[in-house]
Image 1 (cartoon, rainbow, N blue to C red):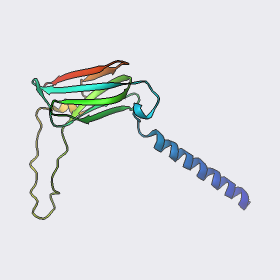
Image 2: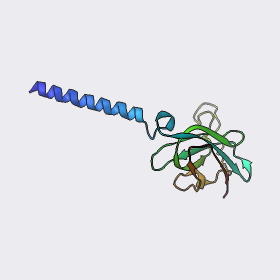
Image 3: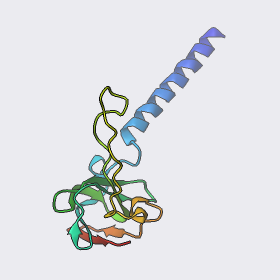
Image 4: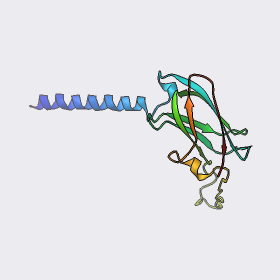
Length: 148
């Protein structure tokens, strides 16, 4: 009886270990660079009132597959992604995370909250953002001028 229980336990441990290994390898929504899916480079240019949005993060999300990518906006308001799986994506633009010393650090002053009016709230939410792109097997350059 004990031998059967041990075999069953080892079989369960082996299955659980294999499942965990597969989950780590697959990741959450993986990127095209980690898979053999067809992919293409993407360049996003984000402006507000014709001026580049130079602080923040632009992100692509495919709601069907969970795939996507993103990056920090450059001084020209662009993000370049080397490999994005082909498909339809929603683009979101997020303000940068606050930086500085923790508020509870000795002598630290609370960083004033910045509003980032050049990134209207609707563009920050992937369920509300009207920005859509289709990544094709070609050069993909998309420009968006954010509006209120």
